[in-house]
Length: 185
Image 1 (cartoon, rainbow, N blue to C red):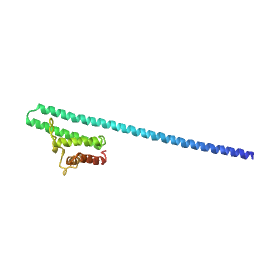
Image 2 (tube, one colour):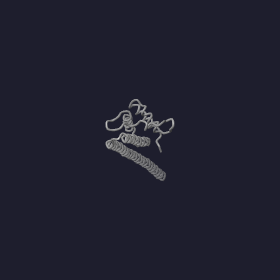
Image 3 (tube, rainbow, N blue to C red):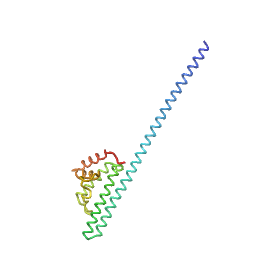
Image 4 (cartoon, helix red, strand yellow):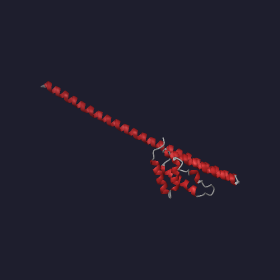
């Protein structure tokens, strides 16, 4: 009987050790899960911070280009008195603005310009096409609108929709719809 008690005692001790080991394993797994979860959250936070930082750099570059185009245009308009030369400057202004907005569209489609900022820029573009400014030429609409019957250009279709919008809310809706499209690869 004594031997059975010893055997039972050792079995109980072994079972207790197994339970403690199982609890330690569960604790280790839980700790590892929490560590991985925190690492993933940290990685996501870092990714968001990097994306935001990168978007800021992209927007800053676009804004710098915008003001450079305008500054150079004003300088060129002041330099020339001949109407033919002034018209060339106005044409170049519209072409450069087209190029900038084409670049911004593609950056937006890649997620590099936030939707709300891009919508504001398009509202400004539309106003500059339909309203003249004191020191700057009016942007020529025909530089932005190509005959969409003969082109398969996403940008031309998009700009046609923007220019057809009757208010800023519609522009925001068009931008939101465009943001839902798959990004360019």
